[in-house]
Image 1 (cartoon, rainbow, N blue to C red):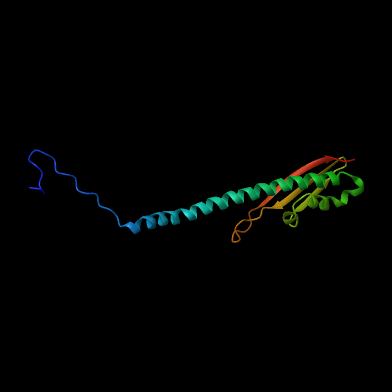
Image 2: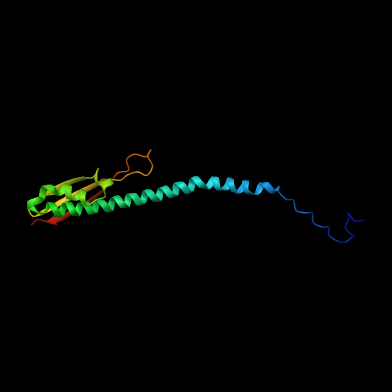
Length: 136
């Protein structure tokens, strides 16, 4: 009477079924492989946001330097070179400057194209900053 339970008692629970030993890592690897593309996209989006912010900061620095130079009558024509000198080299190459000089003020708008982190994504627009300085 070993295999049967005594009358009035609950039967013993069946032993737990075990998975084969070599199967543990495969499930984890498949789950990880499913998350990797999502994590990469989030990381690249964060990096792209940082690059766009950096381009905006560089545009502000360039506009201030260019407006400061354009406000000085002796060296006013060198405003674009001054603006490019205030920027990082890899962004300064593609920057553009627009001067609208009035009699008493010099207003410069610096435009810096936002570079893309991914090579297959094209134009992401430009960061524009405008600064006005009183003329000397």
